[in-house]
Length: 162
Image 1 (cartoon, one colour):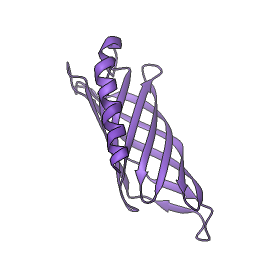
Image 2 (tube, helix red, strand yellow):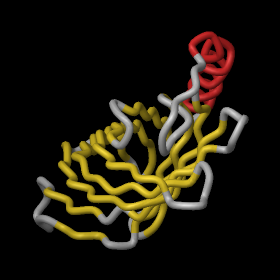
Image 3 (cartoon, rainbow, N blue to C red):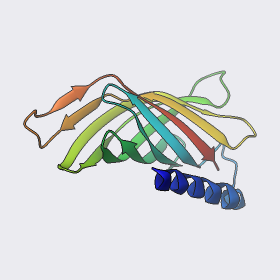
C-alpha cells in the first residue's frame, strides 16, 4: 500500500512540476485539454482508488484512462466521453459515455462494460478539475456466478488540469 501511495505522490509531483510548461487555454465548453489526478470509485461492491488521466480530442470528445486498486483486484478502464456545456454555468459541463474495463484478480480476469453519465467542473483560473459520475457496471466473469449487473456505482475525480 505504501508503494501505491508513493507512486501516486511522485506522479502528481511530476505533473505539477512539468505540466505548467505545456499549459494552454482552450475555448469552448472546457478550458483544459488534459487532466491527470486521482479517482475514487465507490458503491455496491466496495471502494476503488487510483489514477485518472483525461484528454480532449476535440471540443466535445474526450477519453479517460484509469488505473484503480481495491476489492482484491487491479482495474484498467478506458472510456469515451461526450461533453457539452451547461448554459449559464461557467466551467460546468455534463458528459455521457461508455467504455470497457479489465479487472485482474489472483484467480483470473473479468471484463466490464461501463456506461456513465456525470458532471465535469474546471475552476476558472485555477488548474483544478473535478468530476462526479454515475457508472453502472455490467460484468462478464469467469466464475460460476456468471454475469452480473451493478447499478449502485459512483465515481469522483480530482485532477490537475492543463
